[in-house]
Image (tube, rainbow, N blue to C red; front, side):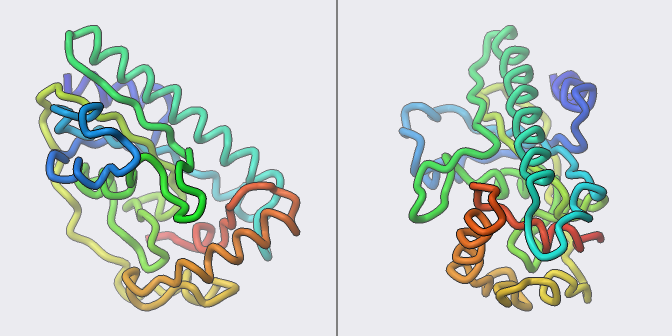
Length: 217
């Protein structure tokens, strides 16, 4: 089923699909009851490429155009995650699709789980200085979602790469939230700017797009 599931993702228009063993990550899925994920030891990570042309319009912050594109990519990811889940269930296994972009704790700005950590295990990319996933070809111009399953699947190897000497995300961040290491990323400064953009740029959602726009491996 490994190839069949990847074919579903690619034929749906997605850029990336990988599988990782994530049993040890389950205790960290704080927003999901442990019995809901019991036995779901494999994480299927799927990614959709963000349009560089749309991002070009983000000069000093997000635009309504980018907001619409962002929502459509999330919809595509959720629909594809559902297709993959149905294919798994048809084979008699369990599948739990996780929404691409659904905040369950607004104060902490956290989702049901970290799609990013699943994507790392699945070999989709690495963590950039901007604390976002970086895909080898798309850079940070990628949205991701996850399907958890108990179907035994071939797994992909994590990528042993980093951003090298590139510091474009540091240079463009309007609040200097991006540092030399992603571990030092200033979440509070970034979140404060996202709140400002949501109101002042009339997008109503915590998005920016600036460090994503300049990220290209």
